[in-house]
Length: 124
Image (cartoon, rainbow, N blue to C red; front, side, top):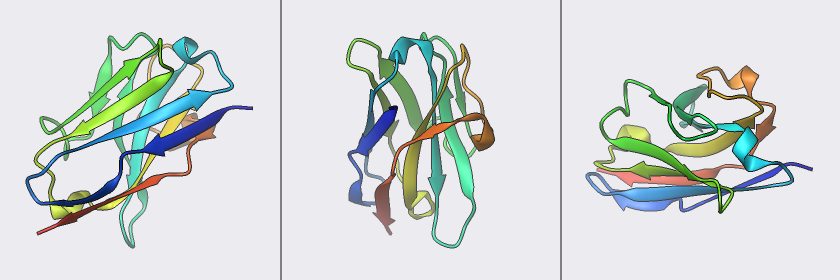
């Protein structure tokens, strides 16, 4: 079955950087668009970034645009989220998600496959 495993989360001071990875198995990765979502303490899960199956088209939430970069390596079945200039409000559990489509989506209900999440904590 499809399995998505996130890694790379941790604790970082404000202004620092982290790179999240999501390793996929059980699917033809190059046929899937990928998304990143996050859920902060006491908040709803929200869209962060998405990337098309080729990697040529990306989308970002306004709150992370210019600071976060989504990329993928189809040879390694892995999608990445490079997070720079982190802020305390970026503190959340970060999830990757997959959907069988050319393009990614900002809507979480359009992704049938999800990882278990990785915690990112940014201190001020």
